[in-house]
Length: 245
Image (cartoon, rainbow, N blue to C red; front, side, top):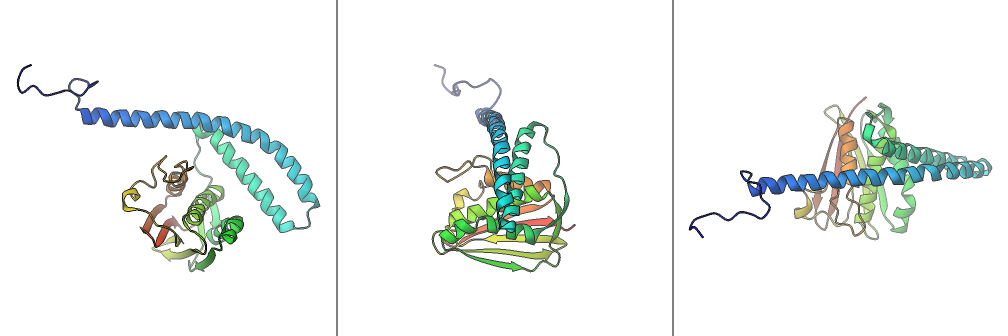
């Protein structure tokens, strides 16, 4: 063997550095994952869509007999929202821009927290609201913004044990609405901090790694920004900045 001849990585392509090949291979694998996820999601969405037809019919019959009109409207609203989300999944390949209209952030936060009331009361989580935004109206897609808020609130609840505290705060900053969702949970380890918004990244046993990635995408669709502040053992705060109407 000739002295000084460099070793080549198995499977390398002549003229392309191994680290570049590895990067390309990694990206190809992620594209394949995304393609498979899209196909899987479309199949699941199709089945959910079919099931929703029967569920909607059955619920309408029950809701007409219900004396709790407020809860009946919440159920109708949520069924409509789920149907809309499934439709979005089916149209993912030809995704359209968000349907922007005036949205009341405070109303949407309250609705989202109400839907998680059972989970929070079961863990004896204290909920605090500190709405200080001069104007709570933003231009957005109500369904998608609710999806983003629900993802953050669910993460906060799951990060806390018994007796935690969840705080939702709004304020006006440089012409934008600043929404902060703070928990007193376990916090985010330093080694995970730069990855939490990445697709498929999760530390949960049964997590999908899609919640925060979807939330970031929704915020960006609304010309907003999202960031996180966290300290291990003390909790995390997710901050969303959205333009006023």
